[in-house]
Structures are given as C-alpha cells and as structure tokens.
Image (tube, rainbow, N blue to C red; front, side):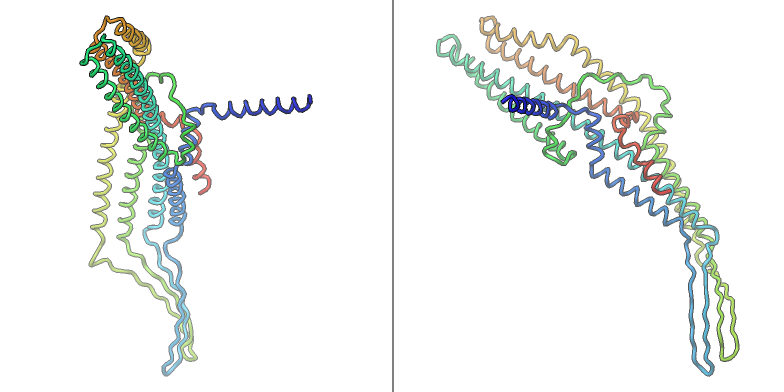
Length: 419
C-alpha cells in the first residue's frame, strides 16, 4: 500500500509539474525567434540566397567551351579532317559576370536580413494589436455587465416608482450601446487573431502567445552616430548593393563591346596527302558597336545612385521621427501608470455608489461612466501605440536584430557553405 501511495504521489507531482510547464509563458524573444525561423517568407529568402550562391558558382566558370569538329568529304578525292576550336573571352567578360553574381549573392543576404527584420516587426505589431484587442474586450465585457446591472437596478427602481420612464429608457439605450460596442470589439479581436494565425500558421500556436510586459526604455535622443546607424541598416545595404550591381553591369557592357575571337586548328587527310589548317575569325562590330547598351547601363547606375540618396534621406528622417514619437508615447504612458490609472479606478467605484444614493441623476451617471470607460479604452489604445512606436523605432535603428539573435548566423553559414 505504501508503494502505491508513493507511486500516486509521484504521478501527482509529475502532473503538477507538466501543467506548470504547459502554462509557463514564453518570452517575447524566444517566441519571435521561433516564428521568424519557421516563417515561409524567411525560408523563401534563404532559398534565394542558396540560388544566388549557385549562380555565383556558375559565373565563376569559363564562358566558352572548346568545340570538337569532324568532317568527311567524298568527291574525286576523299577528305577526312578533325579539328578543335575555341572562342576566346577577349576583355575578360567572365570576371565581370562573376562580379555581378557575387554582388547579387550579397544582395540576397541583405534581403534575407531585411526579411528577418520585417517578419519580426510584423509579429511585434500584430502582438501589440492582439493584446490591445484582448484588453478592449475586457473593457467591453465590463461595460456590458455594468450596463446589465444598471438596467436591472433601473427596472427595479422603476417598478418601485423611484425612477422615471425617461431614465429607464436611457438605461435600456445604454445597455444596447454597450452590446453593440462589445460586438465591434469582438470583431476586432477576431481580425487580430487571424493576422497572428497568418504569421504563426498554426491554430494551436495561439495558445502560446507572449505578453508585452513592462515599459520599454527611452530611445536615445538626440541620436548619436546617425550616419553609422543608417548605413548599417539592411535597407541602406540593399541600396548600395543595387548601385554596385549597376556599376558592374556598366563594366560588363563596356567589355561586351570587344568581340570574342575564335581560333580553330584542323588536321586530316586529303587523299594521300596530309592536311593541316589554322583558322582565326573575329566578329566585326561595324554595324552595331553596342554603345547604346553601355549608355543604358550608365543611366541605370545614375538611377540607382539617386535612389540610394533618396533612401538614405528617408531612413535618417525615420530614425529621428521614430525616436521622438516613441519617447512621447512612453512619457505619456509612464505618467498614466503613475497617477491616472489609480484615479480612474477610484472614480469608477465612486460613481455607482453616488447614483444608488441618489446624488447623481441617471443621465449624469451614464455620462460620467461612459467617460470613465472611454478613458480606459484610450489608455489601451495608447499602450498599443506605445508598443507600435517602439517596434518602429527598433526597425528604424536596426535594434530589432537584438531580438532575433538565433538567426544571425544564417548569412555566415551560407557564406561558409559556398566557399
């Protein structure tokens, strides 16, 4: 019996432990890393890196293979020849192709980093939206319950003759309005759940969504080393790499203006006599010297240079504006947490007592209660804006990479695999 009791105790302990593990909240960083690693868009970007690496290996191969020729001619005399010809890469076009492919591989890695950042940012924004809608649902439920209780009390007081028909109608209208508001909030929650589901790809994963707790730290303002921060962003790296590709294409088009000569050696028999020949041929670029292609490549380079300047300006502005916006939202939230939240709870409890004591009319009670609930909803909305502005600051400053550290080795591993 003692043994059975011991086994039962152990099983109970294991059950409690397993339940505790099941409900243990996952950290935001762990959740983000799992989501980003398994996201199809990131897997597609990783496949694009592998494709670019294969293209780089292909570009490292010679442009032209030798050609083997055999010829037999039977006329008055039988002629048999065998030859070997080779087209030469005059101007080293192959190295220009390799340069384009190498920069294209770097471009794919930068796109992979940007995709990683974007997925993480989308997940944080969706997470903030989801929790805001959850909190809005709690407020809507509380409002509906309060209006239901209020309507019940109003009906009792109306029957007792302590409440006018106008006040009873106001109570009924307030309950209907609360019911409509709850339906609207539920629709918003469903929409945010579907957005998260699109990111997670698994309905069961919705049960392990982390919470955004605490208050994020202030962004550095004024920002030091703006240029370094912006130049390190994947968006800026992409712009520079597009410029490098355009420059490499200019070099390629210039080298393509040089024709590729062909050398052939043939040997054989013409009757009983030996036959040997050497042939040299070269295209003559007299009708088309391919100068228009060079001009087009130069214009493309100018376009990419101007685009990079434009992107850099936008990133600098976004870096500053996102920091200021986040700090403003954070300061307002800190002040609300310090004073406004407690005062709102006290005022909400006081309102019901004053109305029941007859010190507030029904209309005044409804107006003030609605103001209290609207303020609470505004606080929830501001918390959503706080986390959204924080996410935008992380993207603008590049600090979002610190939340997805697991995937930092992807580019290095791809580089090692290709070498």
